[in-house]
Image (cartoon, rainbow, N blue to C red; front, side):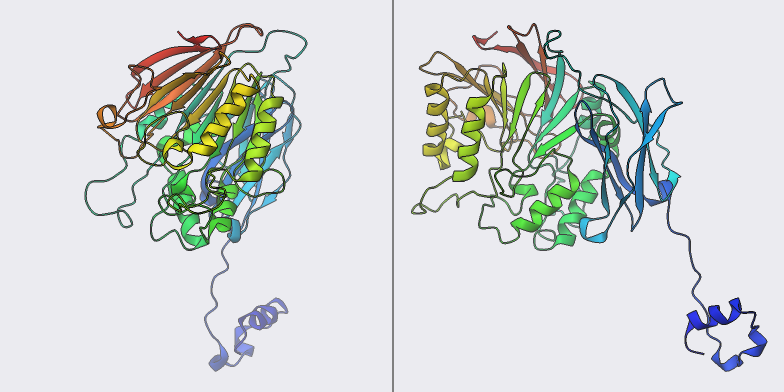
Length: 461
């Protein structure tokens, strides 16, 4: 008897092994129960976007599984709600995005994850707070944003020989200790290696490995996470719109992050926009549509592409937020001609953006940038009398550009703001509706404050 399923069928009918010719008996592989609960958890949970009436919880399982999230208002465990069950699949790296849609504004919630019907038990809190309904009622709430870029996590068998490029993972613990209301990743959030670039499975492995970093877990579980990408989580170093696997890279990025949308105007990429309290956030994609850095005769050289640039400028002009936060991978204001700065590679596009801001009299524009492996603040006062800022926050845990203070020439640098060690930015928005302020602190991997500045529409304090 060569079919083990037929053997099971005969046994179910009452046939005994004695009635089956011994020569036909073959060993049957044991049928194991599907993984569930903690045994099935690969990574997460991680919060994605959190709005007034809805929140996204991301989970990754080890194999094909059903994921559901149970949630309740803090202090009121007697009334609970459940998300729909989301089935995970191999093509999307067994990731699930569960939507909690029975929420009310300005309330704190607790939640727990179930995989194949069993609860996941964790040693840290899993909580979130919905955005409050403040409009037409009170002043907008104060809130705190954590931000940074360049998060290299070592994996020796695939890293370059020599000194490890990643270190000081306690930076993520320090971010969690600050209890920010949300976090915005500024690109190079993982570093694809040579073994990862050319396959979906390679990209999925890199994201999965980075997302498993122990120091990240408490931060991801209770702080809404938003992200853009830069070259290293898009493809090879300095990669651009000619990257043949960019669509796969976009699909993997989309699977692993919980942004509200991924791309605008029918385009792909990581572009999106959201509002937190009274501030507008514009998340731009400087890779998917990028013309090659060093193609001198390429027509319409651009980091953003024509359609995305048009959308961004129009959306920026429509914003009435006190501060417009623009996240993009490469530095915008700096005059440095090192690396992939706008001044060096796309000066015409840079000038067109800055002239548009000036011409439209747009106030409170703050670029958040990464890439450079050091931190600095740039400030420019345009001819309309408005200040434009560029906060570069880097690196979180990758290599550090230790000579940046002397080798990077930036005419718009605010003195005393260069930091050449692992760090992150902590931005606190506060004040009454008509006079909002932004306090920027840079904190190192040991929790030490490196510098602090207050940004207003009238300048740096």
